[in-house]
Length: 412
Image (cartoon, rainbow, N blue to C red; front, side):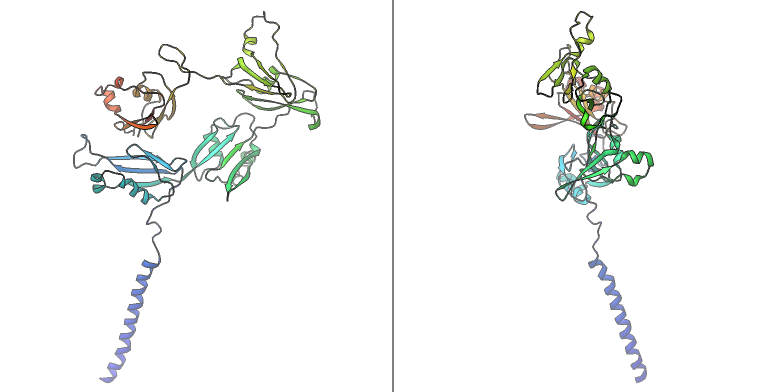
């Protein structure tokens, strides 16, 4: 009996030790490895989100049904999102879970107790600015995986005369500006994506104008023997044009070299700034429309150092009687439920229904019961509800709701 007892005791101690060791291993990961996803994904400027917010139950819903605001929402360049029920909210730098809690806390108590807001990331995006010789320079929000060709497309492409071999990217790093070359011309020839440098948040892409050298003497002039005339404004190819030193160029010849004026050019007030500081104004429209009686009018001659500006004609708005309004007046169509967003011309007595119709109507997924008219009044924002469906049925006649210049129509 003593022998059996002696061999059993070490065996029990062994299994007891093994059990304690195994149990401690189970506990260790719980405390040592935090859950990296517990707070969600951090949101940056430009990101595209899907937001779900509980709303007040209306007559269209039974007490047992849920009513939600469900939309794709884009974080703007300053880190804000706009929600019709909560206004502008700064969310950049917060995680999706933190934002969900923030939106829930902004709800009325009776809604936040029964349901929660939810925010999920759809796509990581960032804002890039493009300047220079492109159709529509400005800020654009593109996917983080997109390259420089994407933002060129967003800006409507390059204008004639753009130098794609000398495109540059300006980037702020550690408080210092860094210049990065992007030879898009080589990329278009070779098709190698590694040629295009990646874009970062707040990068500035600049597309330069190709230096155009015009040899009027039949030879390639050297820098010492040429002078420059600059033309800019409402012309199709603004830039520097060369003439041999001591020679002159007719204004009409310069316009032809610049591929002519644009459709909105104001040819009645062409400005010429001479190299010696003198200024002249030329009415080219009068010369074009002359019947031959004004033979004394001739195109001015230009010399190196002269600068020519072709102004753009301002398109003025008119009221119902056809009178010109002193300043152009516009309204803005916004929101994911609109088929066409952006600025629209405004005229007095315009209704929301007319404005939405001119913008291409609403999308199939638009929440037409909760359209908001955002209006500035005495420096304060006023949100006016508008029910598109009731206006369409005549229950709330659209003619009773007149827009004002500067209004923003938000279609969720």
